[in-house]
Length: 370
Image (cartoon, rainbow, N blue to C red; front, side):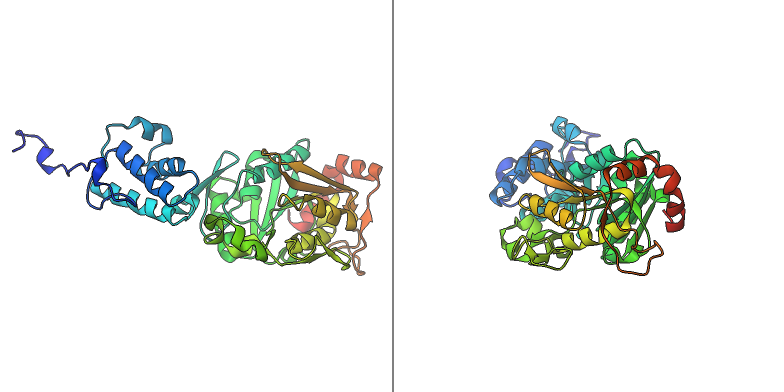
C-alpha cells in the first residue's frame, strides 16, 4: 500500500526498456524521456530513417512542448500514458518515412518558423541560397517588388518580406490549398499587409504587371526519375511541386534543351515569360538541380538575358541561377500590341535603370498594384 498522502498508488507503471515494442512505444504505459527517446531512435533506425536520433528528438520535443535542450535535460521526467501513445504514433508515422515536417506541421527556414502541410513542398536549406542572393541584390533599395512563382508555403516570398521592410511581394501558386498555407504563414509572420497570394498558372494571374525581381523554385525533377527519390519525398510531397515534364524547349521553340528527361519544362516557361514581367534593371532568380545549372543559364542567354550567373549552395552544389539585363518593352502592361520582343539592355542602361528605380518605376508599381 502506498504511504498516506502519496500519489504512488495512482501513478501508472513505468515500462523498463525491455518492454518497449520493436516498432515504437507500448500502448498505455509510461516511459522516462531517455527510454522513450532511445526507443524512438531504435525504431526509426530499424526502418531505415536517415537521421533516427535527431528525428526522434524533434518528434519527442514537439509532442512534449519542449525545446531539444530541455528534452535532453529532462532525464527524470516520465511520460504519461497519453504522451506515450502520442509519441508512439508519431514514431510510427516517421518509420513509414513520412517527413518530420508533415508530422509536426512546422519547418524552420531562414530562422523563421513556417507551417507546412502535404499541400506544399517542404522548405530546404539549399533554397536559402536563393533568398540570401536575392536580398544581397536589393540591399541598397528602400523598396522593391517581388514575384514568387510557385509560392508554396511562402518560404522565399515571406522570408524576403520579413528581412526587407520595403519588399512588396506577390506570390502565385497553381494549388489553392498551397496558396492558403502561404496566406496563413504571412499572417503568422506579421507580413500579410505587404504580401498578396494569388492562385493560377505561373504569370497568368499577374498579366500586365511588372516586378523588380521574379523568383522561383520550380518543379525540376523529371518524372522518369521519380523512382530514384527517397521515399520521404516520392511518397509524401506534392507531385505538382516536384515533377516537371520530361522534356523542355528553348524560348524560341527550337531544339530540346537538356535532352529528354531534363526536367526544365517549367523553368523554360518561366525564363521565356520573365522579360515581359520584369521592370528595367530587374533580375530573375531560379533554383535548379545540381546537373541543370548550366542548361538553365543557357536558357537565360537564349531568352536575351545578358547576365546569367550561377551560385552554389552551402554544400558547394551549383544551385541558383540569376538572369538579368533583359527587358521586353512591348510586353504586357507596356501598351504595345505586338508580341514581346526580347531586347538585351545595354550595360549603361541597366545601371541607370537600377539607380533611378524609385523615380522611374514608382509609377509602374502603383499602376501594377505592387
